[in-house]
Amino acid sequence: MSYELRVNGVEFEVAAPGMRRLLDVLREDLGLSGTKEGCGEGECGACTVLLDGEPVVSCLVPLCQADGHAVRTVEGLATAGPQGPVLSPLQAAFLEAGGAQCGICTPGMLMSAEAFLASGADPTEEAIREAIAGNLCRCTGYTKIVEAIELAALGRGADTAPGA
Amino acid sequence: MPAEPPVASPTSLGQAYALLAAAPHRPIAGGTDVMVQIAAETTPIPERMLDLWRLDELRGIRVEGDALVLGALTTYTEIRRSPLCVEHALALVEAAATIGAVQIQNRGTLGGNIANASPAGDTLPVLLAMDASIVAGSLRGERTVAAADFWPAYRRTPLRPDELVLRVSLPLVAGRRVRYRKVGTRRAQAISKVVMALAWREDGGVWRHVRLALGSVAPTPIRATETERVLEGAAPRETVADHAAAVLRGELRPIDDVRSTAAYRKAAAARVLHRLLREEGGW
Image (cartoon, rainbow over all chains, first blue to last red):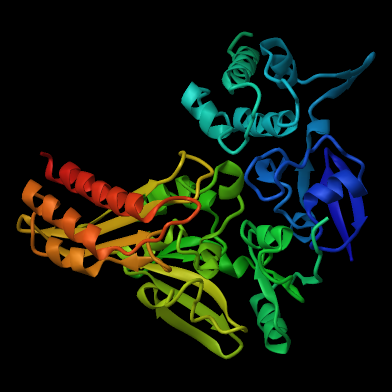
């Protein structure tokens, strides 16, 4: 079977079994290894990607259910600049706040945070913590991750503030 | 990589029924249980899968007559965002918010929770407490099963191999209140140790039509009928709460397992009920 996906804005036709995990399609068929496999059971959130803008764990989504839909992965956050890729404001905030240590949870954290910020929800600490409740981190203690997301939210607020 | 059994993705219910009538298929909705079972090989790998995700006939939340009707493919996120659910089934909204975290809520479905038939299914006590009906369908037609009859034994349902869960109907009862509470290891991503839904109507200062349903304390979601009898016709006073909690503790027969102990589950269930009654009684 062949399925059509739009990944980070690019159309792909994937000839693979419909029950293949979206995670494996991204990493093995499309070579997008930014998305990480953690538990493989939907518990840890490391493989979080956006499906039509909503966070999902790609280890639990079969290819057949992503057919015709838009997928966004961590590779889709940075944008092209004259001197190479430019980190998104969210990625830059993670760097600035020290929101990463070993890095395995980071792509999933970024995607959950990206969806949260795009939702326009009030970025209180409680709301941020709920937004990343499905993403486990065993290094940071979460504090700096929450700070990074707050920092990115402040930046977004400034971008959209009247007269800014 | 995990096993990748062949899958059919019908685009209409008629096609799905025909496929099921021709050969056994394992249905997959949001995949939050089935994909785990395949990856962890906790059940035999299905020979064929039936992808339900394109069956828009199984989507939607609406009021029909005096019932709130939810399509089987309704996700927990859709329940949380639904003004109709907030108005008519707040306990279901509360239950949906305790399931997994955002990623699971975006994919997991009400029909999947029902068909997966886990004793820890977090919406199932709400369905029991609200006297829900579950509509199943196949080429042979549709039939309605009361939630009270839907989980007769551990991980069993009355669904025949060619049947799908189509929708759930929650009767709208004037003056009914429903409370929900889940106890897990943490607030998100936790499988319940105890989950409870309590429904009643107040009538002249006392409670009528009391339903007390629990999950994770028996091989199936259950109603605690002895405790219901204590609360029926009573008011949520402290003496009533003490008695009801003691009766509940005696009525439940939970087990020790990886997530909790029988003793903790009995104590937690009794305490949760006592606290709900205290909140309702305002003492």
